[in-house]
Length: 355
Image (cartoon, rainbow, N blue to C red; front, side):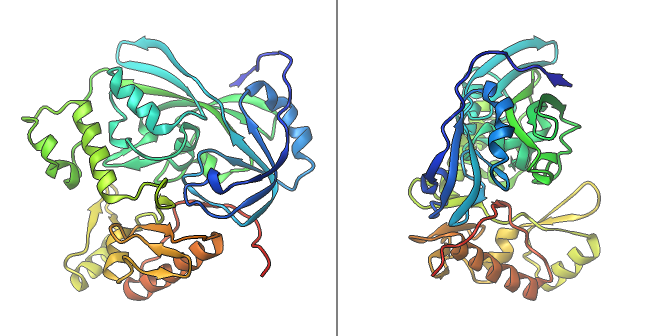
């Protein structure tokens, strides 16, 4: 469904060179030859004319799930759209529209504070709201696609504002239509449908063991779950403001039942989760940890000493450093377990600084 954008006079944002070190949570050295910040959807119709001067358009949100190259010669579009709007409720749900540039954790906090339950398991995930559907972010038994009603986007192929339903978004494990076709869509806002009748999701062992939830007498509130998730994530994951990182760097690999049985026979302590289709999701962090990578440093990139799933900037790193470490880990895990790891962050195309 296409949506007409408001007709009003708008000044097109300035295009300028820009260091991107502060625009990515890994803190990688990166420089954009051309950069613009979008804070008004009314500027989108004119974007195509400006973008034609460049080989491609790279959309950048909070930079929490990307590996940026040292040099980007393309046009980088930073999303800075703001606003949270309560929509009319329905008998079974609360509806809320959030602009793509809003902080994800800030939005989750807003929901918990205002009695809008259903997103608390996704607390403290860094990044912006507009990036959440791209990656179909998930944690502690919940994927964001389960709470999304529809997504408002700018379709660069047709130069139209349209609305995609959750089904249209083709959500899958850490995947979506937006991730599969990144050069087509610019997400402008996301509409969430949150259940009026709420049931806490507590299946993950970390939540079940958390004392605040264990002491809730079997009836934890959404605030209880939110506080527990924040506590667990802070204990496990480094703060990007202190140690550059992009959160979990690898997806949990999925294997069929025979491969799982074979691995379990060889490695009895293997951590895995059964899936509804009979396959098994392996804990990538366990595989990397057991291979001896936790706390290891290669060049200017390192594996975090508390969570093997997190790669960090050890100081002055660029994309080449991080990707070299990721390749070494991937090769080792493949050799040991016969399992292929895939990166979770988006690897943005560009070029290294010549040495």
